[in-house]
Length: 329
Image (cartoon, rainbow, N blue to C red; front, side, top):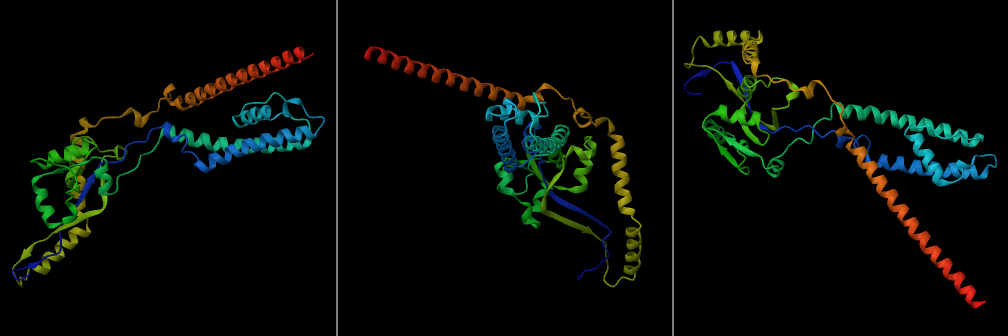
């Protein structure tokens, strides 16, 4: 610099592009996410193959019970074991008993893992997909909030000017920050410290609120320093004092104290969400199981109707054959 000498930076803060955070995922949609689709397919194949092997071994053994000699009954037994329900009677042959014990161990391992993850997803289902690109912001119909100071930032840093998003213009930065924090369809460029201070004023201080999310790699850092006259003898003295205060953490201590006072001052604005502390297990969480029960009932009724129709057709054909035989004689 020709007009003066800069001191060591005494204060820094960042500017980030804040975007909507991912919303909590529906609990029941996570049920089938416990295992990968390929593993679900393998489980179904194991169930079918086990039922077939049960019936084949029972047929080859004369001392085996009748309930293990048909594939349909073996499927019912295999499904019952998998769900942890007892079967009517245990196998008699050693070969079938050995396979029976192996399948019980397999079912116990799978069901235990499923129940553990199922309970975890009911209590904490996690978050959905987080927006990461401008294209995803555009497809999600997210608006961009602009305030007066933003225009100066955008002129200096082009990557912070997402012109593809629908703009919403406001006069004050607080109004823009308020919309970003309270709404889930607004994005904006914000000073990190300012928006955190605004969130504390609104009572949004818990980490699990998940309200402040930033676009990756879309951040700039600004540094402040003092300028002294060219060749000033006080430059080294200022630099030494600034470095000592920086190493002592005076700046961070001041920020922390301000945030603590703000949190205490606006503690009345903090709203406790019961869903974050307790989980009430209701019938609505059994929706997927009622769907499965309804689907099974419809399938059973359809199969039973088909059996009645086939039986009626075969009976009619048999009656016709008997009439034709009687007329011919």
